[in-house]
Structures are given as structure tokens and as C-alpha cells.
Image (tube, rainbow, N blue to C red; front, side, top):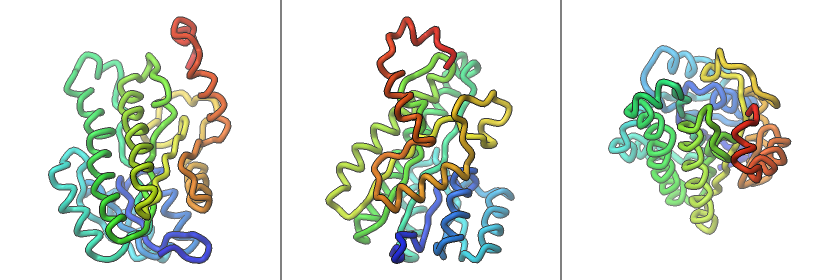
Length: 251
């Protein structure tokens, strides 16, 4: 259960090596989170992340999880919930893809969609069901402002995030009376290893800034969080720009 300050005592991070996910885990562990599960593909990076959190004082476990294998999600994640209640699930996995290459290689584009949307849909439904069964908990889904309006430069990634965002909103409505809080987080450009080498966009954020926004959103029981907050106004305007004009914008 959450403590008197609203901090989850236990966290399941789907995407155990995610920069944003780990920044959030570190922040929560510094508060009062005591148990962390890192779910991801087995790797030295996953073990190193677990070791870091252990050094910060959290009882940390790793679990082999593959977003591209939804047939195993129920079994893999079910074992985590069987170990005890999970107060918060953070869905932080995803791939950016390579737009230029993926337009020419449909199977590569499909992999982006399967990871960012299909895999996330499957994992979210499994976790939401488990949270409902235990009677409490929050599911935080990392979306992106890229899903607000598809851009020529990354419409494959953007379309996968648009699907995830719409799904997570609907899931939140479905879970609202079932004891489960669903929060959609829409960061803009974040300086992470996934975006390394790309030119920084205006209003760029850090993983730590996103983690701060996530913690605040949890305390407020928010349904949607924008990072930074100014992007809510920016995207509201861009959403209504006529397509012929939008195509010419440097976004």
C-alpha cells in the first residue's frame, strides 16, 4: 500500500533499463518505496540497474520480460503479483525505430508497432487485471507528445504512441470504479539513450524531470501528465493547424 505521503511501497517497472523508468525508481526509492521489480530482457544492463537500486536501499528483483512475446505476459507478470501486492506499475518500454529505414522495411515498422502498442496493450491489460484483483494500485503509462499529431519525421513511432495513448485513456475510464488509477504521461523530447544523437527539440526534458512529474501526478491522482507542462498548450495549438501548414512547420 502507499504510505501517508502517497508514495508506493512497491514498484513494477516494465522496461527495466529505461532511463525514465530508472530515474522514477530512484526518486521513489529515495522517498519510501522499498520493493522494486525490474522487468526486461536479461542483460548486464538490467542487472546493473538492479544492483544500483539495491545500493539505494530497495529490495530489488529482476524478471525476464519481452514486450514482443505477449503470449508469456500473463505467466511472467502473474508470478510477480503472486509474490505480493504491487502498488505501482510503470510501463516504460518502447522503441523509437528508424523512420527512413522503417518506411523501406515494413517488418521493421511492424516491430515498432508491436513493441510500442501491441506489447504495451497486452502488458497493461495483464497488470490492470492484477491490480483490480488486489483492490488497489496505479498503472502509469509512458506515452509521448508524438502521438498527439503524426509528423513526417516520425509518423511510424508517433502512430504507435497515438494508439497506446488512446488505449490507456480508455483503460483508465474502465478502471476508474475498480480501484485502479491509470495515469498517462506525455513527455516531449527527453534526453535519453534512445534519443542520443538526435538534435534536441524545444522544451527538451531530462529523465529526472519526467520522474518528478510522475511523482507529482501520483500524489494528485492525475489522469494525464504533460512534461513539461507547457507542451499541453503547444500541442493544443498544433492539433488544429491545417495539414498544408503543418507540413511546413519545423517540428
